[in-house]
Length: 63
Image (cartoon, rainbow, N blue to C red; front, top):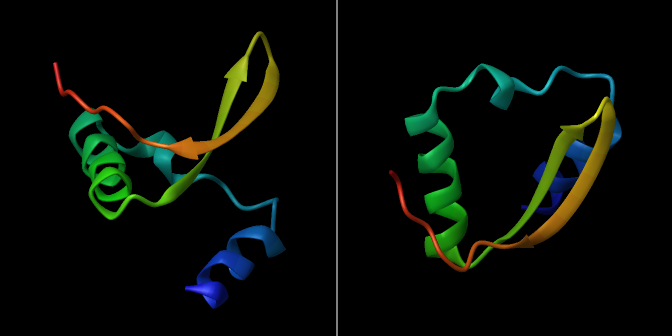
């Protein structure tokens, strides 16, 4: 797990593939975080700026 985490931080120039995932694929990844009670790192764009958040998924509903 530590090798995987390290590789994620090594190259910030790589394209984030989650931009190309459909809603079901994103839900599946979020569900894995939820079930494993794992810490997630999220990056969103808000008015042209990148915002980063870290946290746990405490509730999940696919509507």
